[in-house]
Amino acid sequence: MKIAHTLLVSMLSLGLGACATTTAKQAPAVAQVEELVSLSSTYDTIWMRGDDKAVQSLQQVANQLSQYDVVFFGEFHGHSGIHLAQMEIFTALQSINPDMTLSLEQFERDVQPLLDQYLSGEVGEKVLQEDGRGWDNYEQSYRPLVEYAKTNGLPVLAANAPRDAVICVGKEGPEVLDKMPMPDRSWVAKELNLHEGPYRDKYLGFMSGSRSHGATEDKGSEAESKNKKAMDAGMAMAIRSFSAQVLRDDTMAETIAMHLQANPDRKVLHLTGSFHSVSGLGTVERLLIRMPELKVAVINPITVKAAQAPAITDKDSKTGDFILFVQETPAMFVNEDREREYMNKVIRKRMGNKCVYTQVKESQ
Image (cartoon, rainbow, N blue to C red; front, side, top):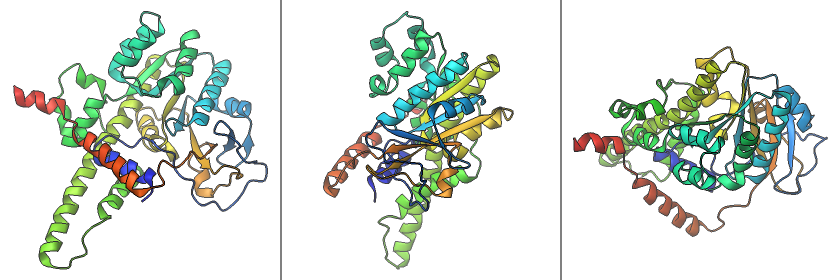
């Protein structure tokens, strides 16, 4: 099992959502685009339009994206080339449309007042980072965009659902939201869209692959009964995990929608893990449920091996209105024992997460 898949499944099974925490591998390509050259460094990027595979300059991309109300920029968290491209497209869009808003998965909705205080100069970055539960890679990856917004007086949305709520839904299911007191309940979406469809199928597909891995081959009735119970329990866990994922999606979508409804003249650039936006699924489709009149675009990254010219399948070209080619990052592990050791440590840590709202209810 590839480490990227292993890490993802582990996160899903523990109800923490499916952000792209590791760089996904590029699917086998069937056609190489003649205009493209190899990427020589992690910072190098190549832009391509999804519908016709036309190579684009940054300014061409910005000119076209400026016609959209909301642009979703999917990312592999921590990829230097992607974060540089996010900064470049944000400044390019803002030069065309001065009334831009930056929306971030990387801050949770309950810290919006603190983020506003930071933008107005009332608190320093250390306070924002610690009290605002900033990501470990904030300084390297998101500080440039937030500082640009601060300098230019642009709003920044803390769009995501709080971690405590995500953990609770992953462990207890969406019903736990009824146990959340105010104002906590207002920090997550009022409605969750848990409908069946491609996004749900994709999510549960990861989980089913994990559950089938290592299943017993015994044919006896007792073994079959154990297998069925294990599969039923696994499916129940997967459904709860999907609910936690959707809590993030719907909360981010609702945050953007509320902002645009209050500020109809603004345009939004939203940064998020690519799983939340690829192929217009996840947060994208949930925003359009709330505001179907919006014109929304998706930027989706695809990795390329070093010293190889990018190539792309028709299927991959449809994952975004624009494709951003970036260089593949180094393998996390080459030794299976070290990978297993790391994963066990991650799983033990995740398993220790408790649902604070259940604990509060039980203590009363």
